[in-house]
Length: 229
Length: 252
Ligand code: SF4
Ligand code: FES
Image (cartoon, each protein chain N blue to C red):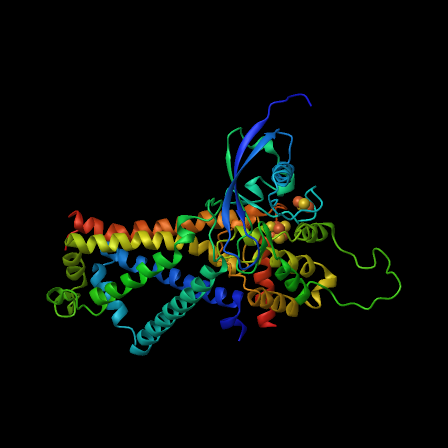
């Protein structure tokens, strides 16, 4: 099968799964930003809205995301190993013209993000990191209903310096990964030309920066005491 | 010659007797070099000195020495062809260097380009990629009328831009993955852009990229080092075009 065995085919799989996860990251950030109060009921209302969706949709969505992550990691590792072998002996003088720190370290920023993902899921989805503050166990009233206290869990988590630090640090990895990854998607899909390619590099970096700032603001404002539970 | 100022340079050159030899760097002094010497002429001077003292000259590839054949192939201070924009090693001149400079000279380094001797590598893997699809099949008969197939000028120009590739392999040498995507992208594109090449476009892109992998070239990770290294200014848009051709071939 050309898609899973060939050089370009596997890159296309990397590009599509990667870009799908970028879109997820954008939507996830928009949803999370309800913590700043633009939605009536804040992040608790947003979380409740998500959880009240039909179960098959929730499960289907989670399985699809898991599949994306697995495909991306699998081919990411495979291609990186192959590529490291492409130049068995390095030059005595390293003179890099166009490659960047981000493009050369995709495997490492990606690995950090994968580790972070495990922690993040354990923290806020399975809620096993700090069971006392788990939202599922601490219900609060919202519009005449009792709903999980997501806000309390998030605020309690980010009050801790190390937790905030891990999240902000992971977002640096996300920025680096996406500043190369987003433009890479367009190149790999063949959706770029000589005029658009340099613009796409800048746009990709800009989107990555936006995601970094958006996500990092949440733990930082909580840790700084600006955003309170 | 108007000025008689000369330079003395220290060269640190990769010496390797044969393919399986481990190879090592040797240091040489290049004396009496003027700024008008080309880089290869400078090496000629060093080689004459070496021959006079009964040593093996530094072996390197070259042919036209006017920047059109793509034979010369040296990585100078880490940059294929020396890093001057759109310039092959043979067209690089010593005015780019200063008296007293130390210059590292290495062969193309890539898994698909085994070293034959010193600075010469075996680039026949690029020929294998061409053999896999770098042609169009047509019935030959009488010579066709020049304008029997109308090709708009912008289309012809685009194909010519791709066809500028001289197959030197600097893109592979510059790529941290030793990938031949720029070379293959240029070769796939120059034919895919033109009406004569469209018939075999799908099999061509599949066969050429599969051969690329079989020959041991790495995959592209969009660093764009190839474009920086290319002496002919081949743009990575041709890699994007090859990716499009590949997707078309998958779907159709
Ligand atoms: S694309 Fe440029 S660097 Fe690569 S083989 Fe062709 S001319 Fe040389
Ligand atoms: S020797 Fe022909 S291009 Fe340099």
